[in-house]
Image (cartoon, rainbow, N blue to C red; front, side, top):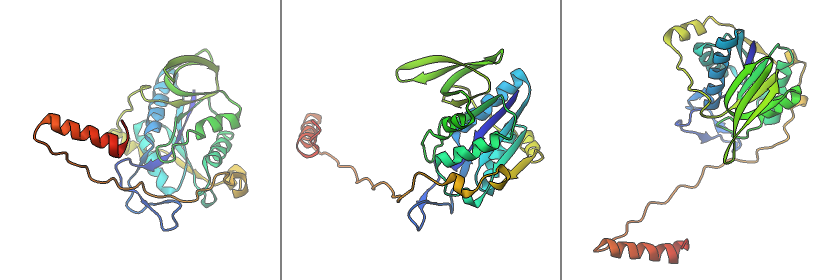
Length: 259
């Protein structure tokens, strides 16, 4: 079975993020970059599928040279090889442009299952995975928390509002991961050492028969701004708990107008 994992490198949730001087992107200086957390589930599920059915696991990513670090993390977990699409013309493409690039790369590859995180923790748009499936003309199942592959079919349990639903689709298929699907493994020291020797191929848009015009963004970022700073809390004094509660209720009613 040929399994492809779509992976993105994102800022760590605990890192300090600042806005660049142009006001339209983040300043990368001092940012800690990691594998997108939802993509960790994708890598783990790919490794479990390989264990059950054999085959290979390939990491496919789009980004700068720094994205190789995230690919190496996937290789240290146990993936077999990596492919990075790195082209300056793709630096400012939107989610749909990213999907077009990844789909073009996949069209040059053999695959049975493509797995992606349900969303990236930076732009949070839920777009790339489903768009890739649409561009490839293959079935897509999102928010998967359980899957089995048998006799050329995949059977997935996915979350919906208020419950779950079970869906089936023929291979090849793309599905996206949800929390609860698995528990991603940590990269072991031997795995990290082996990852250094595993192949990571770099391609450009020209290698895929594409140009910057093919991924012209349909969404433009007009500006970014930090959320407003929260004001300090207000202490309510009083001789007793009842007096404090009365003052609190009055403030909520007269000032905040929430009751």
